[in-house]
Length: 157
Image (cartoon, rainbow, N blue to C red):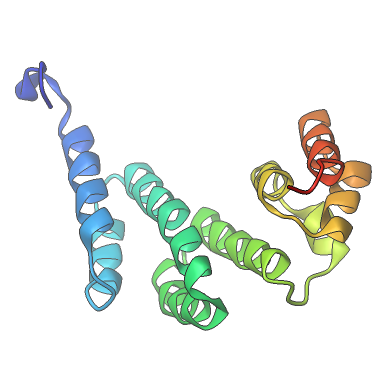
């Protein structure tokens, strides 16, 4: 925290930054305990924000390593977040996105019913023409529909 008076920074902000550093550096074996520790923080909103940010970093890394690795991670995280609706939905949507990206089973109904976050993420990351067509036609927002349409009609390099 260069250029700041550390005492002027609220304690929960310092904890959040520490959690972010720790989560970014944690190894696979220690990750579940660290996630559980963060979720025990008295500031529930801050704790969920830290874990959500971690999921948003970790999930794409694991997707690159393949479905099995991602699925093992998701199975490990699920019971830790079971009482947290937002985190449960985020993990479920990362799993849906993984299925679309890797060409596994997914349903149009799941994509149409997904949050704006998932639809935006999918419109900007997937290459599957069926998913992009679905989002072009049924995306919840104009931003999603336009992004999916642009990606769908982008020339293949």
